[in-house]
Image 1 (cartoon, rainbow, N blue to C red):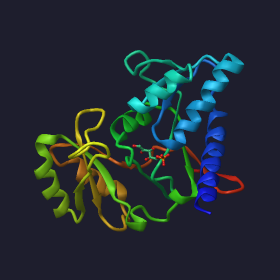
Image 2: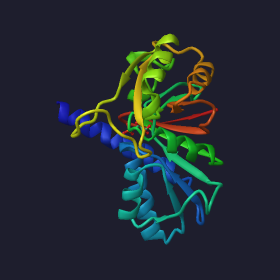
Image 3: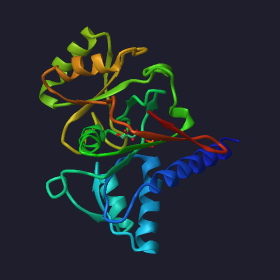
Image 4: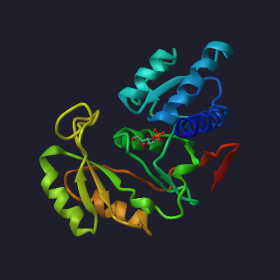
Length: 235
Ligand code: 5RP
């Protein structure tokens, strides 16, 4: 039963990814998000590159995205060479009807936000389990990337803001996880977040916070996959 459900979720993610890939045109610079859903998009983009001879260059938001893109034969470029990205495709951990997001459960939130901000058009692909009315539902914590030197200070300040800060531990590694940027991640549970913009500013203002997992007002369109169809959410 569980294996069957997992298979359906994988299929749903793939369908959302296929919708997103349709937006990519010849000569586009494409921001490549991170995560298991985006992996399907990178694979599908690689297929278009091979089969349609589509000329695109990718800007990966993590080592994971970088490696997948290379494997799929997608040419890589940098923000220095192409500071304006045509389109970015990324996943999310939560999404509201207003297209506000929590991201960062894959610890790639800093580069994901940089790529999204440099992008003219942002597409989010998720399965329906990520859809919520209010960010923070289901005890979802907000990932926050923190300079290791400032860890204790940031934990205290987040607690003052009503968040429950937990330093994320590694899997297959003892101690805290270290991000692609050499930092640590605090997962902060704030309960229901009615005003993510306001809270994002307060958290970002703490010295030592590199970036927060709040993605507000960045997304243009989302494809949300259910078992039998892909719903489109647009502002
Ligand atoms: C990584 C992210 C991912 O986009 C997010 O965690 C969703 O991942 P998945 O598609 O595997 O559920 O923000 O930092």
